Image 1 (cartoon, helix red, strand yellow):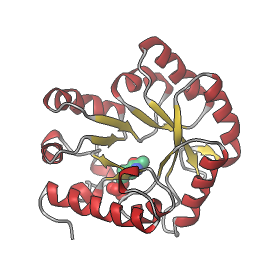
Image 2 (cartoon, helix red, strand yellow):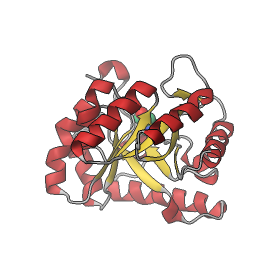
Image 3 (cartoon, helix red, strand yellow):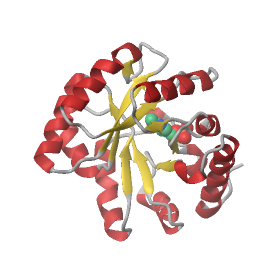
Image 4 (cartoon, helix red, strand yellow):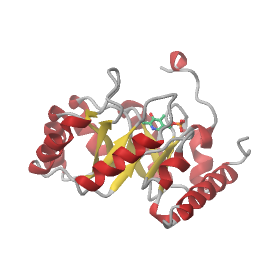
Length: 228
Ligand SMILES: *Cc1c(COP(=O)(O)O)cnc(C)c1O
């Protein structure tokens, strides 16, 4: 059951995060809740802002550009995370709009983002998305290519903050979260963006520092076919 006010939904999720963190002997404040507001309009988002939440995730540059500049005028201190795939020709727009980009997954995008960052002077946190199940259709850098992509990103002085993954659907996610956590230790990056509405507690016990939660905060999204 999803409680019926934004404040209650937020409190319930924060409680669950805190409980999972405590179980794993971690501080609840070590986990950032990214409220994934994709497909939801400003009127749906405002109650969470009014409840004090400030960290949000969007998966499309265009959609985010349409709703967040006005909300930012209204509510100071918003941090916006891009969690969806990014085309290189939108790198400038993404760097201008977002405070973190979770979907860095290929050499051409590293190059485009490095240029966009140089031009703008803005330095959003960059996370490398890892295709942790090595699935054919999925975005993300193949696990085997991660060392080379990280080396390229570091040479380009991209502000690499951590790793992100979306585990395969319909199977136990814990082994995939554990693999991402191991990769983050091996490569000495701090942030671990993993865990969604269905599995965030598992992710937190395995070390997630950022969880991306949509449905459990906003309710069900319209089916993909109905989205613009
Ligand atoms: C939509 C989305 C989420 C949120 O998913 P829920 O299951 O609604 O919590 C998290 N991460 C990414 C990359 C997404 O696209």
